[in-house]
Image (cartoon, rainbow, N blue to C red; front, top):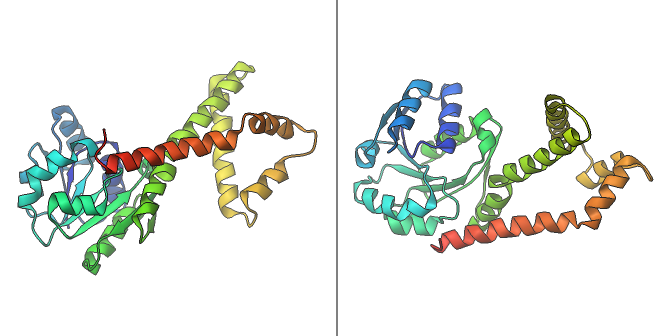
Length: 267
């Protein structure tokens, strides 16, 4: 399969890395306007690049739009008359619905997917939805691509992708922000930076594995750690007094609302 990426940023590179590491039979071409990035992609991934979108999409089986949603209308206007009916177009842009993709591109074979940055190490979570009546062989190949980057979840309602954008798409930043705070606190209390980082990384990783593999829910697992009058109870008391849950809910709601604004074309 010939795969063309329009845009060679972090998410495009994460997907390319997954394809390469899993030896998925494909020919990859990236259309990228920045020369230094093209040279990096060629050297690091051993792929072909160019700076012309129309040339790039010619004879491609898959065209992956790895661009910012704000520039999508311009890109769509540039390429829509060059798309063939056999080509499958994949969007990894936040907030751009299948209806809008179809409207701007005048194309019926479209998949919308929301990956996340852990895809860079094969631990991503990609939520996706396809248009009806698409070729099964193409869909199976697309699943292979997503599985090369981690987990894939197909949904049948675009609202679920909008929600996932706020949770899994933006979620790594929230978790890393929390980790950054834990590391800072550990350093302030007297730990060396490297020691603090190692403790936090392993604690977060271990907690995630525990939550995923345990038969207990997260509340039960929290209760397992929390002894009355103990250190964990003291820390949780502060988080509860500051309404930590409401802070998280507000952040998720704000991210979700922003995605809806983007879908309406608001800047």
